[in-house]
Amino acid sequence: MFANINRHAILDEFKALLSKYVDHSQQIREERKVWYYGQVGLCTMVNSQEYINEDLLNGWLRTIEKNQQFWLDKQEELYKLTKKVREIGLSEVIPII
Image (cartoon, rainbow, N blue to C red; front, side):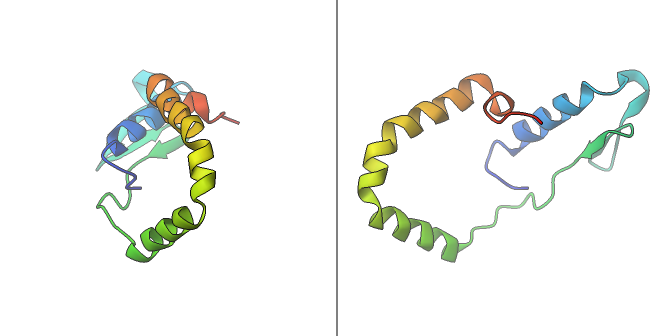
């Protein structure tokens, strides 16, 4: 789904994860922007056009405004987390089950 300008990187990361479980020469194929990984799974992008839900945005802004002290207390922790995600990749921050 459309997440941000990095959606292609996210798709590539999913494709790399799935490729670990199949024989590359025989089981990976692409048809019409859908990548198939044998009987393991597939990857594609849906809703790849940006959609902005103004109501959701307004709700988040009101939430932030009402919880200003929380955000001030957590800003350093949030900054470190976002920096870590950029350095090591999403798959290492979110454990794979």
